[in-house]
Amino acid sequence: MQDSIRTENLTRTFRGKKKTKKNPEGGKDFIAVNNVSLSIREGELFGLLGPNGAGKTTLIKILTTLLAPTSGRAWIDGHDVVTEPQAIRPKINLVSGGESCGYGVLNVRENLWLFSQIYGVSNSDAKERIDRILEVVGLADKASTRISHLSTGQRQKMNFCRGFITDPKILFLDEPTLGLDVNAARSIRSFVKEWLREKPDRTMLLTTHYMSEADELCDRLAIIERGQVLACDTPAALKKKVQEYTQFSLTVSSAVDLSKVPGVHKATTISKEELTEIKVSLLDESAIGNVVKYLVETGGKIVSLKKDEPTLEDAFIELVGHGLDDKEASL
Ligand SMILES: Nc1ncnc2c1ncn2[C@@H]1O[C@H](COP(=O)(O)OP(=O)(O)OP(=O)(O)O)[C@@H](O)[C@H]1O
Image 1 (cartoon, rainbow, N blue to C red):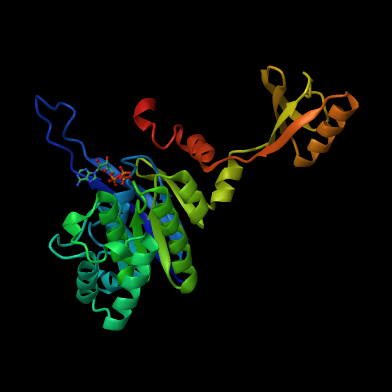
Image 2 (tube, rainbow, N blue to C red):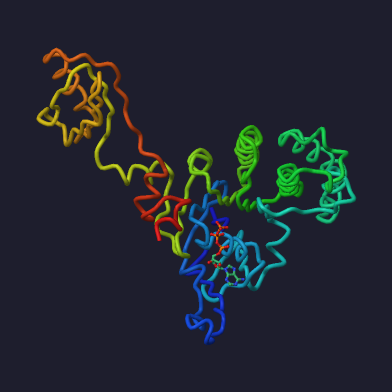
């Protein structure tokens, strides 16, 4: 099966501002996308996760033929983004979360209809898709409202709808749920999954700042920072990489020392108030049996016992050195 999206040493630099007396640091080129090689398979929901300025949008712009790479190559459905943009454009669509689109004097349905006609969608397909997607995003009751009268979030929902009207083979979603309320974001996530399941030859590339969204949705993820891919794997594998030992949190009725229990790598007492909270890391998950046995034998009462799963955020922090939104704070 051929890759839907493939890049080979893709690089994009931007010319820096001229060096002047006022700007002595100027004159240097800035590398926004740095030697990125990725293969995204047909049917995959692939995520790009990275802090502000990591190069995600620049990468998406190159893949959607809006920006030329400085060096390296990229193919969409087997077509080169530089030499065959005409073959790529009918197969793709792009939704950018922050962008607002459409004509203010037209209502929501008219705008979506207009887009469908620009892309040559048949009348019956357009009608069916518009009805369905408006329902999904909770905008059906605004179908006859002029878009100049929509709130920012409602405009964003309409923008999301636009991405699906053409039924693209490959869809690029740049922060699709940014700033949307919890219910709308949830419906969008479940629709996205359903949309991919409906036709196995569809592919989606998504960027998001929401770790839980990336974890829930993406088959695979690339963690990107300063234009470079630091890791690329399934969310489960990325999380596993950061956790060498299996972790458990325990609350027990009395202070105990679990560090000598066979199979325990480390036991840390977190708090000792009325009850003692302990974090224990095990060489192997089965060693939790030894811990429980030890507590029973020493008369300790277990109030709670919970396995701590690593989060995608843990993996991100381990790889990038800071959280997704605290780049500036960490500099
Ligand atoms: N046209 C341009 N000229 C100069 N620099 C640019 C241009 N477009 C982007 N950049 C720079 O390239 C870097 C990557 O930007 P990009 O928009 O790709 O990041 P991003 O990962 O999408 O960030 P965000 O999460 O904030 O959207 C940034 O430092 C940005 O300032």
